[in-house]
Length: 266
Image (cartoon, rainbow, N blue to C red):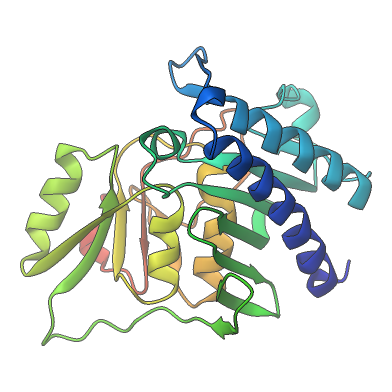
């Protein structure tokens, strides 16, 4: 597979999904909200984006299965044999969508041997893109503007830690982590944009010491890693892996430019 060409094709599909989301976002009368079994919200925008993305990815790679938040999941006895798969969050940050603060994204990743090798994160209301592919680096783009290659920031002793945290899912564990850093500046952000702020050097570290699912992180992890950073299990210090076990819940994790061994419980 030519990952550079595939990246362009995925971006085109994600742009379509973003447009479908914005059509609903601009019409308050279409803000119907249901709730899934885990009590998380589900909107017409989630479903419209999912329908479009699944169709486009099936056209693009009919032989690669899709793991999407808003589609019925294949049983583990089938999934465990997948060598490749797409991991999709059609609308990450549904709570931010409902709050109308623009901090929601469309996430699409390609996984090979349990590792993300391509990722696209698009915030349609902000017209902000982050994308990456193996051997192609990591990039940021505003609308149709110039593509800027991105790199994680090197933390220097003379400046405070720049920490990004969840706008809607903060925990006491995160507060304790930030307090232990000492001199730190905390910025709140929604959706997978938090990981992207680590990738582009706007933040040094993102401690997520609460629940997430694989589709919440996979695309952005590709971007962080290809920008020189890491997304690591908060217990073991090992990189997060995808479609590697029956549960699609992630362990707690820390995304960073450079890890401190003291952060991990091991």
